[in-house]
Length: 119
Image 1 (cartoon, rainbow, N blue to C red):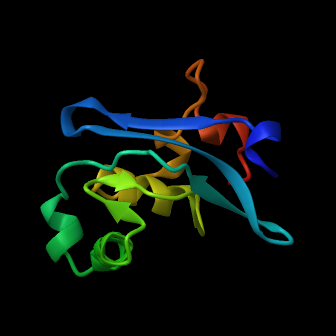
Image 2: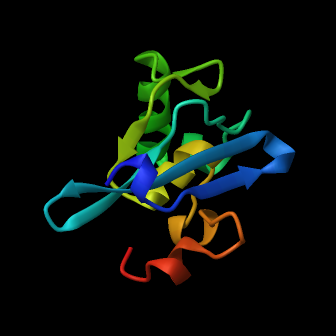
């Protein structure tokens, strides 16, 4: 799938400044991941449970890795980046534990989980 032939999804959180666009992407022959597009903006804060909670530290470390490697600079994706799932993508963008099926939506408001229930 490339950007021209796939549906675009959006993930925003106005109160934190998060505003991202992306699409479903095959990461394996039979596994869909999610690509966040260059220029997408991540939340300007990260929830405490993501930073300090044992259950969610993995997601926080992932976001730090993207910042430390230059994929995210000053809160903005510098390149398209493919995650293993829509939920991981939403969690990094929003800075809080997130369900990709309910956070990503089309331009007309349809939720990813309604458009692609197999995700």
